[in-house]
Amino acid sequence: MVIRMNVKRLVIALSFGVLLAFPIQGGSAVAQQNAENSETSLALVHFNKLTLQNKTPLTSSSLESSKPEDLNVETLSAVEENIARNLNSHWAWPEYTLEMIDSYSPFLFRTKKSQSIEEIKLLVQVNAKGRVSGFEVINEVDRGLVERLDHMIRKLPDCKPVPGYPSYSSATFEMVIQK
Image 1 (spheres, one colour):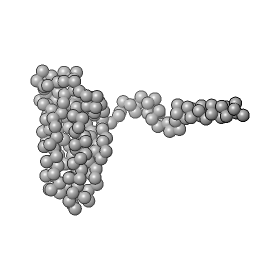
Image 2 (cartoon, rainbow, N blue to C red):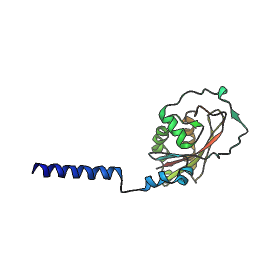
Image 3 (cartoon, helix red, strand yellow):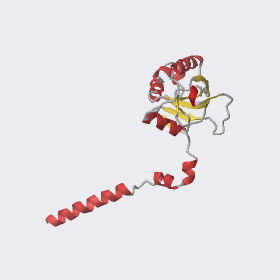
Image 4 (cartoon, one colour):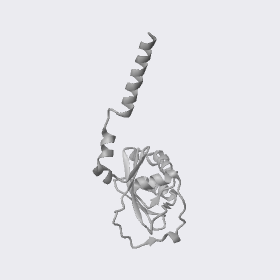
């Protein structure tokens, strides 16, 4: 009787271990094995209602670029390094930036006109010094929402240069803020 209970527990434990080792869903395992998918990964970051994507072309030859000596290049936190790596960018947003932008969602969608919009798409330009130099709204929005976006963009912190690059040029990021 005691042996039978131990065998049952052993079978259950082994079954559980096999399920953990070999999950039923194989989508992520296929993506890891398929070299083509990892090469063409999108440079984007998701955070709650916010999606941030690097839209700077890889062969970007900007007229203006900064040398590391001109900038305050310092070590980044693990979160900032992860954001820069996921965006495939030589600029890193400070770690509180995504949370800050996400917190502006109620402010942005507070009027009747803006509540009818499901998401806001905008391009944010960062210059060669890491400062946000401008933005362009992609979808159709009212003037009040553009003014609230302008307020939010002015509050954004400067980007930090990722150590190890020979020069730092301007970059463009697409921001999608959902209601």
